[in-house]
Length: 124
Image (cartoon, rainbow, N blue to C red; front, side):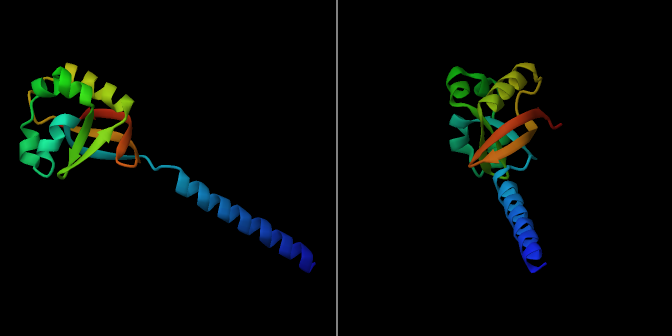
């Protein structure tokens, strides 16, 4: 009887441990709201949301800016997008009628300082 309880306890603890490890390795999906900006220009605007909001669609669409990739500025901190996020941002820039202050909501998971984007949409 004691042996059966001990074995059951070992299996239960092993299951809890495996669940704990699994929960730590799976990134949690969330959303960020901020201003869409290219990586090249973000360096000049980090920490200054007013300046970031005045960044233009024309600038973000220029070849050098577009090649640097995109991200979102949230409360003065820049978060880079992954490749899919860059593609979604480029598509957004082509369709938006906004000339500046491109407030967006980004859905995805964080990996380091990069957002693995699942969706991107206009906030206002």
